[in-house]
Length: 341
Ligand SMILES: [Zn+2]
Ligand SMILES: [Zn+2]
Image 1 (cartoon, rainbow, N blue to C red):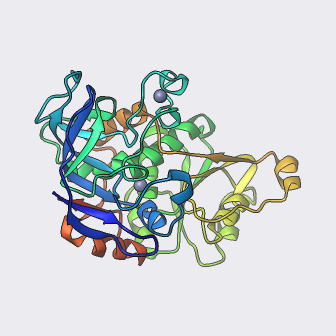
Image 2 (cartoon, rainbow, N blue to C red):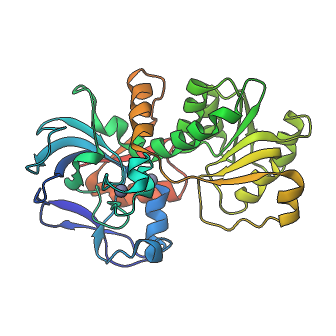
């Protein structure tokens, strides 16, 4: 089968032929990929940012936002069968450890992360597990929902955690209205009555944010922190969802956070430099966010199938994977780029 494989860091991946995976273990599931999302994390993987954390051996297949149809199952699989349309939780988990039993799939002690530390879904077939499969209505087109498997679940997870803080009368800043941010806006709309202020450096992204229900939009032109403070009576927002968190945006996001408010770090790539006296004197929180739980993805799919969260996608054939990565890197993708093997 064809797959998008990274051979060397700081070099473009290679599209080449590799053997198809097989369902050997009892709970193995092989999925025929219908859609594989292209994510900024893929760029960060190529830049070697994940090398130490993942410990992955090169070459391997990238792609961690996957949906498709069940192609083969191991002998112990009973929750899905061949032909089912599925979206995949990004981490096949053990189901037995403390984190799994608490529902915190992303903190499983012995999970894999296809596309990060094992072969991923920018290929014709992907090996995953029964626990990662969420069965969808057969009319669902995998390419239309694939990005919900990572971009979507990550945005939803952060919003879901922030819901108790976002009572009516609050302000939530969405910093970055790209692949994750545009799902975050819709999730906020579906789950809260907060006032949504969207910050982005791209005017088209702000236009999309308005269409999706943003109450205010602010162009990130260097004066955006002051603009957000002006919109909040000089106080800042109760919650800032920072979908960028690199190249200085993370400092701006903290500066937009109100006293006793929370800065949710969702994007990544730079360091946060905050004087500790600012943290204690204002009781501002910096909150990490990693993907989401299996149930987060189930809930998000309910919103998606009800039409309350829609993905704006641009589709590319698998052979055009390098174009998709280049377009993402250059900021030419509105919403999410999806490969359709
Ligand atoms: Zn991703
Ligand atoms: Zn586990």
